[in-house]
Image 1 (cartoon, one colour):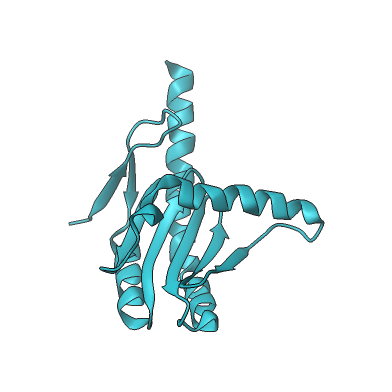
Image 2: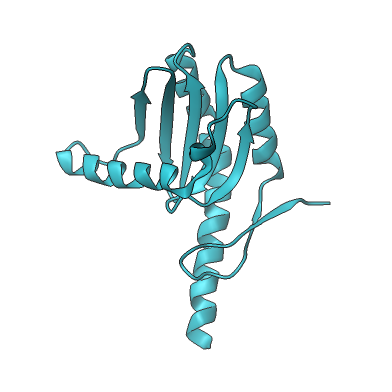
Length: 153
């Protein structure tokens, strides 16, 4: 039996069915096998969470849509520097570090303590690119289908 996650998009799209059983398993495996990793999130550009794996010490604000949506804005702005499209942004803080990947139309966010190996986080994010792009294609198709359905109404 295939497991589906339902998520309501804030842009007025109806419920979107996204197959995410394998992606959820990848995220959970990554969380459990990576030292100091606190959370792995896959969201759309508006911050709607499609899949996640979280540890017990996760700050609540990380699950807010603004957390991922801010990355979209920063990524768009950095693209104006003339170096091409932004692929990843890494932010470090006193206690934590955040690595976010632009796998359009989805965003992968890795939140870890500052003790985590940044290179391991980047490699893990790159390893998840293919499964996330597969889910991203499903999201894109569902959005296109929704737009076509609205044209007929």
